[in-house]
Structure formats: C-alpha cells, structure tokens
Image (tube, rainbow, N blue to C red; front, side):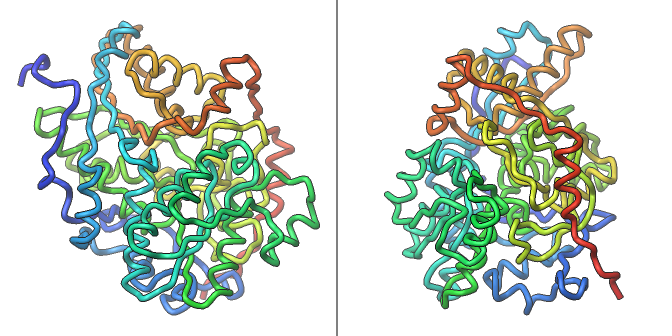
Length: 460
C-alpha cells in the first residue's frame, strides 16, 4: 500500500480490542528463572504466594506455558473507555529531524491516569474483587501506577492503600491528589506506619525513599491486614501479561497497512510497558517468523541493564519479598534525589532480564538532561507533553532517526509513548530554568549496592 495513504493516527475499532493477553514466556526457549523463597532457596509454590497476591494472579505469575489468556469481559468493557489507543505516525517529528526514517509511536496517555499502567491496574483490581477481598496495597514511584490503581479500585469499590516514594510524594503533589480524589490513602515512604518503614528511617533518617522501600511497606501492610492483598505495577510476569494489549494493538494497526518495524524502542524501569509493547514482536522473533531490533532505554542514574548484575536479589529494600533473578543494582540502591525522570526501580523484569541475557534485545542508558531535551523537541513537534519516562524512548528514537539521516537508511521505528507529563511539571520547570543536573553513579556507588546481593542457597 502507498506510504502516503498511512494516516497520522491509526485507530482500531472497539471490537478489535484484544480478547486475550499474550504470554511471551510460552515461546521462550529459556524460561525466566523462578521466584525463590529466600529462606530455603527453593522455587516458590502457589500456596506460598497466595498470602501476598490474589489467587488468579498467582496462577498467571507462575504459568510459563499458556500462550494466550482470556481477558474477562468486565475488564474488556473497562478497556473500552480508553482503548484501543492510537498508533501515531510522527510525520511532524520526522520532518523536523530531516530523517528518511519512519517513526511510529503507540500512545498510552489518553486516560485520566495518564499512562499505560491502567491496563494492569484494572485487571489486578478485578481479580481482587472477584476473590472477595476488601482492598489492595501497593507502592508507586512517579505516581502513574498509584493513580491508575486508585481509579481501578474506585470503579470496583475496593479500598486502596498507596505507599508513594517520599521524594515523588513531595515533588508531585498533584498526582498524589488525583489518587486521593479517587479514594486512595496515600502515605509517603518510608513511613512510621510500618515496622519496616520505621527500621529504614532509623537507619537513614534523611532518606528520600525508593521503590524498594515502598514495596516493603506495601507488602507488610497487605500481609498484616485481613482481607488485603498486595499488587505491583511492573516487574512481575502477570503485569507484562496484562500489558501485552499494547503490543497486540500496535501490531494489528501496523498490519492493516502492511508496515513492519525494523526497530522497537521502549523505556525500561521495571519492564511493564516495554514487555507489553514488544510481546507479539518478540514472540515472532522467538518462533523464527520475523526479526526485529529491540532496544530498552533506561536512565543513566539507575542503569539496571547496562551496569547491573544478573543475579538473584530481593525486589524490596526491606528484604521481605521473594528473590527474583534479574539485572539489578542491589535492593539497597537508591537513585539520586535529583533524578526526576522516573524509572527508579533497582531491578528489571525476570522475563526481560532473560531475553537480554540471551542476546535477544539490547539496552542503552541516557542522561536526564538529554531526555528532557528530547521531550521538549517532541512536545513542540508532535503536540504532546510526554511523561519523563516516555521521553527516554523518545531520546533513543530521535538518535536512531538521526543516524538514518547520516546513512540514508529508511528504517521504520516504533516506540512506546507510555504517558503524558502534565503532573511532572516540577521536573520540566527545573529543565527550563537550567537547574537540572545529571548524576551518574560511580563504580563505587554501584559496588555498595552489589555488596547487598543475597547469598542464594543451592536449589535441590
């Protein structure tokens, strides 16, 4: 089909919302390493996880073999409020760059939560409601996940307790207020409301917090209050499963016009949006049906893939969660307080970690000042103020398009625009005022985090 006939925005119909999530693990030759019980070093069983997670979510977490999982009708009905999300051809950005590259982005910011996080939040809240639970607890960093979960819980009539990383709680009061508007109880983490929070504060009274701290508090709150379970917005297998709607829709939209991307780019913190975007494309790659270049983009101040170690580690700072084998900086690693771009988790999804270790995808780390430069250029050309997290992918997409300008290669690039940045204006203000600084951890900084990696008992 003629290139000129491709519209700016490619929309699918309501009936084309996927009816099933795609489980990428089913096609992986090397499965992601199992979660381990830190006390025994043995793979966790469903009954051990059911005290933390909802029963149906435990099944999804442990299922490495079922390729497609039916999406319950009530979740699909909720999706219809904001899905299918548009796939956009970035004609204006291409023109501004003077590149022969063709750039597409899948835009996930067209809902009140402002990001892709709602795709999994409604699923996790649905399964909690179906189990007859009173409510859920969670952590949030920049606030997108907490916002999404508070929306989903309000829709289903569930209680929602959110532990928000202290530095974000202070920097992003408006996102906090959206959560409260939807009925969530929001607590800055670490806090004095949990034993682990009090312990962390006693050891480091001036800490600005981390996702690892907030996870510890949320898990403690869930396991110490009857009728509650813990839910997580990234990293876990179940979350990547739910987020596969992003990639499934993107591929369906591209297929309508006979477009095959050469390169797929996503920002990477814990891995939820990247795993969701690449899912069907990576599935084809694993099955030998097609080949794609896949690039994860992370912040230079929290470089799990590019400078981390592939090892078993705790997902939380308090070391009360299961052990996951992932690219990690150590559960005690806390990003610099001047880091405003999100993507603050110390480790990466076990699925993506395995794919990266197998050489099936690449990763790069970028400094936040260059990320905000890319965000500004994108806003001025495409008319959307991107979330700082999304802008990491924009940075890499622009860089790749400029390489094409030099070589004349007509590469087709797809990236994930995970959300909008309208609650991130303090960070944009710092950038516009020339106050933004870049921090890259030294080898000594990273060594301190690696020193906290646990010794894992040998598996029998």
